[in-house]
Length: 310
Image (cartoon, rainbow, N blue to C red):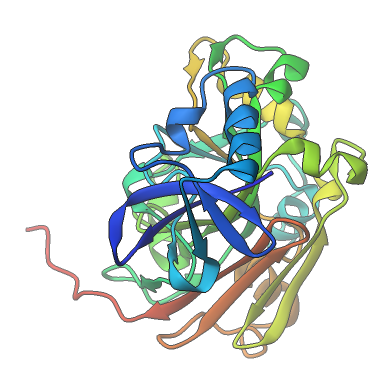
């Protein structure tokens, strides 16, 4: 099933529903996608089947504002799971692959309050000049748990969607010199959407540790990035299991894959030069597309002025 979270001018509150032949079969007001999670997928599947037969409302897709599937997730963890991206970035800095990367599916926590959906403007953060996109796929946790094994963790995934982990590379570069990971260079915006696709819709594309889904990114209609989700080194089950180690994951948590190979300007400019792949500017339109998961489109706009700390 393909789940959508949306709002309508006549119904401004958050609604959810499934896509059927280009129309949204909506649940009753007050039902959110997050409220349908929390078990092994039974409730989500039952609601979807009921909506096919007897929706509370039906909306044309172009008459609503599509939001992120989980507009304010409990947590957002973004991993670093594509070897090509990691290897290329390290090689260009004169570094070999760290053997521990193959042993630990590392991640950082991002900002659940900075989640946005498709077709909304994304502002360059205060003080930033090197704006970048990151082409990723996110998994949404359907059932919580602690100390999960990878197989159990993968069964706990409710679905998948496109994710853009926007980055201010100049701010990020300064922050990471201080050995605390990315902070304000990352937490200003993360785009997710446009739909949440349940795993059964993807099973026929399974290859290696994931799904053979084509991933592309374009800026102002010009293709920049191309990869396959099947190229991922760490499976989503392995990432989620690591996230649950010694703690809990909960329904609605977002697990990002990290950038695929060629999936950001930072990597492309390292290989081909900054003149060919310049940083994003106000007015640029970025479109990320993942086969079966849809297209996630946002426009970059100028941000607020930087206010001094002291």
